[in-house]
Length: 294
Image (cartoon, rainbow, N blue to C red; front, side, top):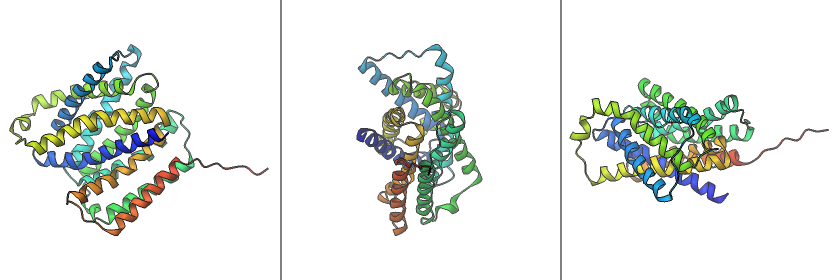
């Protein structure tokens, strides 16, 4: 079980860094769809090479084509349009706050669509972590940066993540996580290709340097490749609901990286928020039983 929790924490560390690196590349001149196309293209190539090295079959049963196409439509396509688009209007930390609310939406959706039990400790833990996140962001004064465009794009990202997890929970029971992530990444790149072909001049005019290339490789190979493989692995082991709750770590990680890189200032409320978030995650992973009195 320790391996599962190590895997999900590594995943959240990687994803927590992506908001900062994506913001830097978008500020440097890339458009959201161009950045995501590069991420999915390079990530897909790396994943395909990994599959070839492991000598895995890339075959998907015909009855699962629709699910796979919808999986890739929701994430990476729609999700990253929402997430990266929102980064144009607001800060990485604030975007990560909204993204951290995804677990609550996932739990409710999976309860109605997949009949997964909605456990009290998961709801309580999620609400506690959200409170900790709001405390962290509020202490930074980031709530004043909210815009209507940013909120709408973030809502698109949230609902895309919900339906992505719904289709993933079905496919992960039948296929290797590496195979699923490879196909969703390749199909995602195909979805973005027409947009890049008709509006891709920034890819040619972008002043690339070693730092930008490093950030792009982190986003492509680690965030789009390795992190999704680890996430799918953990979903298979402990289910969508318990896995998704760890997304509440992302804003804290993003905030920490921002402080290290000098874009955020440290405040004692942020330390308190870290403790609250960790406590919320612990509660969400702890089984709570109620016994009826006879």
